[in-house]
Image 1 (spheres, one colour):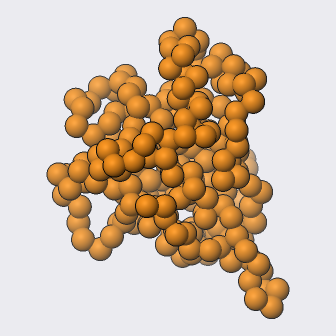
Image 2 (cartoon, rainbow, N blue to C red):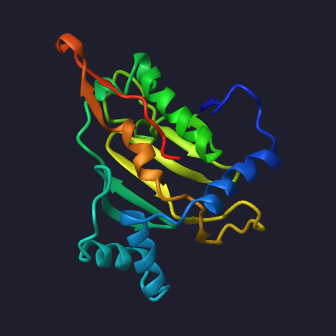
Length: 212
């Protein structure tokens, strides 16, 4: 079973949950730079290209990198980004759970964007049991009522650009722009950027100053 980490101590009602998500989109401009460039190109080509063709096309478009992230692929409304090279010791605590430092950063991001934070386990050991590992690793998933919006893994980052926004009638095939705001990647970046600790004792991640 997945462990659920609340984004704050108080339960979030459905009304306040949706209002918080909508406020991010209404009070901020649409994402610029990397995510904005992807959305602009997708809007230009529409549904003429399938996801595989669109991914190939975007890879040829010299998309900008942002906050250390770069485009990798597009599928089913999600964009997958490459991330800066990570030291896995900064991510995993005992038994493969995410470290408290990373959890704290992720909770702040979830609180700002009105999302719920989960720690699902990686499916690789279930699908490929021949892979030998002493522990089952987990990753971070920040979700709304209908979909995962952010999937943070030490090897990649996935963002849902098109899905089912709050306030719309849910449809499993619906792909509308989600209200993400312009600072999403900057807010996520502290999960992947670390500074050296004092005395050379490893590396510690810096808690984010979330963009307002």
